Length: 217
Image 1 (cartoon, one colour):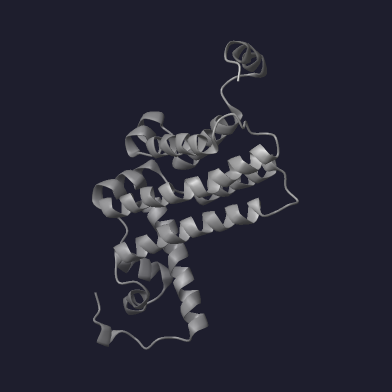
Image 2 (cartoon, rainbow, N blue to C red):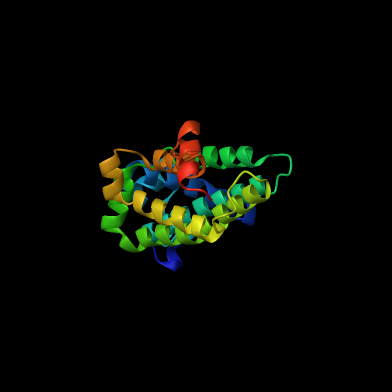
């Protein structure tokens, strides 16, 4: 890694921000597609058409950059959720669909192999992914469930905290590499199916009627 003294002088703030954003975008695409172990700073600098000195001025190394990629992804997801939940023109189902589609788009290129590689080669970064999930699922799904309850489309006889924890634990298990391998599903598919099952349920309309006879609320 270059020494501080050998780094080029800083660019104007707007140029610095644009360069950082470009690095993060390319790094996300490369990391999702190739995984952690194949992700090389030299190759990234080459694909961006910038010097390694410029790259290292923004990030101290690969782990620092991957951490920023994870942080940026989580920030985007949370901002999208806030925007959807704050939109009074949308109904509950429209907000849920918008959130699901946004997640599917962002996770498009993420493969089970990338998560497995991250868990094996960079356990601290893999733990960061789990930590971010632990913080953001209760925040986003807690608000979704509460809004659905207020709209009369989500059950109120079960505490929202229980529902959130149920979904959180399910996702934590489903997104583990062994589960992804067993299911032969990409993370984006797991997330979409989990949301559908969680909010849509397993039972058909006729099955639900029979269920409600035997399990009255």
